[in-house]
Image (cartoon, rainbow, N blue to C red; front, side, top):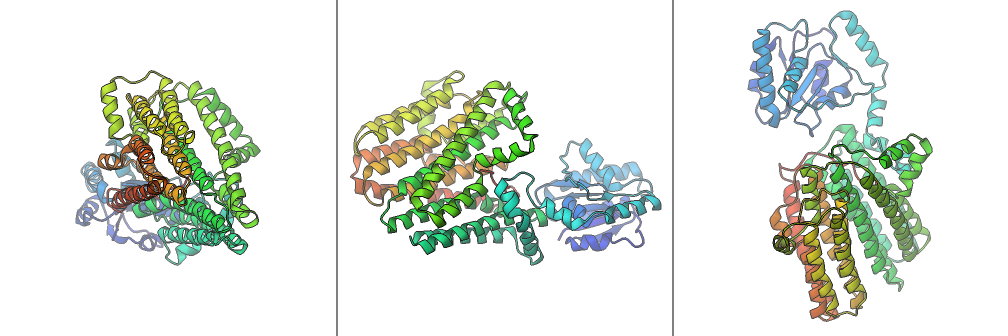
Length: 599
């Protein structure tokens, strides 16, 4: 149980002790700094501990934000500081210094908690200070100041602030105006009944899977039900994040669930639409797989660009300045957010088209919309990259190398090749190598040797592309080029096989590999590093899998190739899921709740 040590002389009429208990703290009183140090030493090392000035005046939610957020080892608001077990030593050291300097006298002039925070800053410790906005958190020095602070707190609708802060500050048009106005109240309803974000996330997944099952029936009633349930799933998807922010219930498991279930829901729904179309005699598995590939590659573009540039120095460009200027014009903000087809707009479009049209039309619209959005966003990012003078860090290069997912074949070729390619040759070679293997697979009959030759060329070019650190202006394009090459090869060869079940098997394989790539992204974003090297080697890396699939297509019959794709999909899924689950439920995973991607 977390412990709150209230420092200083008690203030008559203060609700501080009850407020801290309502937040789950075991409250202990300490009249001076020496007593505080003694009580701190008695708190079990595995428990969170907080120091709070007895004169604190402010909103309960201000204390909640400052003292209960599990994502930060150290956090503070005026008059209060907290430390999780990982930061206990830093807090103890800072308090010991303040105790020796203050001589253990009663606190009558200033706040011990604030002095400890100053000492932590001086020691270089990272203390999180939440944005309070209009919320009040203060340590008044006299009765008049205390009365003024109480009046300021009474003038603010704390619950309204809490509800507003539960909604993401930046979201799509559909989500902002058609979902969040009521989903925030659903989040509060869940919080008051003790529901957790993980439970809501799971409910969202189950709703989407039921929607996919309805779509798989192939009936008009099933399609209508599927569209309604898909919107309901998206409402719950918004609610889980709002609940996490409303109640500050962040967790390692929640990070994994929220980071992966969005993709699982959408791609399962694609499969449901394809199954429903098949019941009506229309084979749209190639369209379903194409939509999944396009959407996955869009996300990799987002992730790679952000990782390459978020900590770059001298990171300015005329294109970025123009974009910022456009964002200052109200209506352009929403237009630009909508045309990239973020998840809210995309799911709304899919739901409506499912209900009133056919799966084929739904996939056509999805492919056209996503292709336009991908072209728009990628072109803008290329322009930014070419016009900015940015010096990218070793961390960014390492992140891009991890996102590339290169395996043992690329590593062996890289050692032989030696030095890498200069400048813009890196993404160009990655693009040409990927285009070669996809073209060889798509433009020849099934069972030919040309795809194998293309795959061998791809192994060589992909090794050359990552032979040096990826710090070039457009090197962030390398991972999405690799994703498009691998997934496109699987689609082309499965389509050429021409047997029932080959494209669904390819869909499963790409889904399993894509999960691995998303898992890599979210580990990097959580500052937890990429998946272990043994896992990348075990599943071959992108170039190894591409070559293996090309060889299997050349050596096996179409029916045997379908079986091989299925076995490979199961093997990859088993390995990556086992390692992912092990990581995300372990103590080493970051305690976050993913904010979700706008796309």
